[in-house]
Length: 373
Image (cartoon, helix red, strand yellow):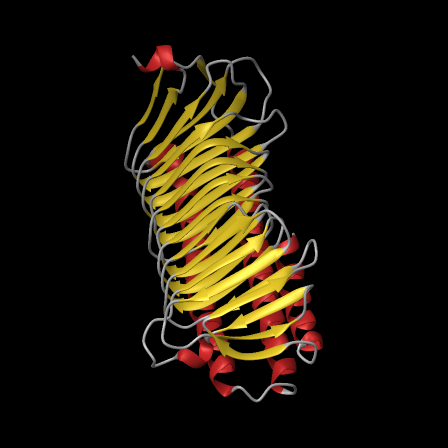
């Protein structure tokens, strides 16, 4: 995906372009940007409001006593407010040309991004995140309520604590969290993966014919609202809850044998292993980039800040991975100790839909207006 490429390109461009433009902290900055530019925003504490505008003019307004340092050029610009640590919050209002790719890194504060129409990457420790009208989104957070609307090319969200809401999402969607309520509406995706430890999951949207959908929570209900004319093969598991359906044409399929269950379990463990390896590689890449920066940059605060966020995220994702592997093992006994059902929605065929909850119920219903009355 383009998230990792975006980070590397922006950092390299930022260092290369520093000699082109380096302005001391200012309360108001206006710059003419190239098409398809990248803007990186680094902060400590304060609210960020970023808006897409027509034309090629970028304008940054700083609401605190001191402004951000500006470096880079019209292709790759960096607004650095990390020096404001200890100086109180410093709010930023940033207007960027539509299509600009954004990287936002901060320790705390709310982040609102709207109308940019480009890729967005956000890494933060705390503060609410609201993103509307973007292309591809990547978010890593420790404590945040996250709201995504009108995303055109998929999203990946990792968080520890906070609710996640997504509406009108096109493209692949991956969500993981620890104590997290997840609400998905009007999703148009061939691949959706939601894994949380504690929290309800609610999904409403169509199912792609060749798609794959996975919803897993240890403590919480999973509710799927689907069109009545959907086709899908459903694997539904609940250890301490009910599996119920309403207004959907469902047919109970024969119970898979022990061999089939073993294959399903092995596949689940293999997926978890691949996900953890992918996370480790991403973190290792971050560490290598950090080592490279140490040879070029003497800013000890920013290095410590970035590494502290990486350590928090690494710890959280590692914990989630271990928990999900443990759940996969526990579910091996479900046909005897809990409720495990294979069902056909509509005519035969369609995508695969996996739903599992250890302490919660699985609810299936039609999302058509007449059926909700």
